[in-house]
Image (cartoon, rainbow, N blue to C red; front, side, top):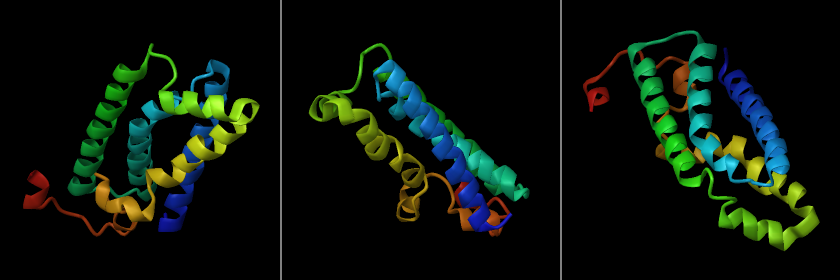
Length: 149
């Protein structure tokens, strides 16, 4: 699968999940659920990318497992911190400020940026996952000493 197809697949998948999360947040009147999804989003992207490419190397598998551990740890921590404590103050403030317009504002300011920010090109240096072009082109085919760190 080409790089653009992998990116579009991930974008569509994450956008669809974010839309469902947004609808759930409207019903719950709690946009904080999006925070918990961040870690899970990375896990989804790394495994969908790996499986879409169809070539699994020791290095890509190691990176996928480590990304999964990191993403699940992040999601678990945010769930522990947020569940049962009501809506986060950031979203409460937005809800008060925008009133009846909050649903639309939250869609475009909280939920829509999610897909892009989960794998934005400018953020690769900060993410524990490889740039998709390296996964797609399978340039990382062997486990190197640095991977053991």
